[in-house]
Image (spheres, helix red, strand yellow):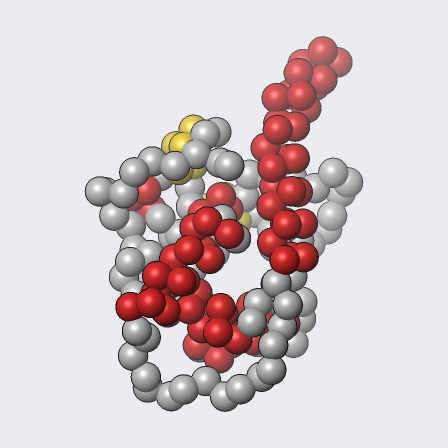
Length: 168
């Protein structure tokens, strides 16, 4: 029984380490810039969506939690950023640990301004900080607006033609 537990812990260690490294890298790499009002009704330019895609897919790697996995090393690209059971577990018991990461593509779970505030301050619309394991982002306003533009663009919708990616 004890060997099974040790083997299970050792088997999940690389994924836990990856999650911790991603959280630390992402949360410490952005700084907040001046709070300017969001432009109302403006359509995002192509470069903004491209920047948002880069931030979501290559920097923050949002898909690791917000997309279901078909195996430990493959994401379900048909359900891209549509929410998923959380595969990370806390090292020590945490009473408020989420069991699922929400859908973030398509219709985002708040207004544009809610999402920008979340990504620039780490505070959600209810005034509370995000719960671990979600990083406490401090993106610039421009980066946060680019992320929101990408998530709402349809480019972040499930697409069969995208290549399979594995955790980095």
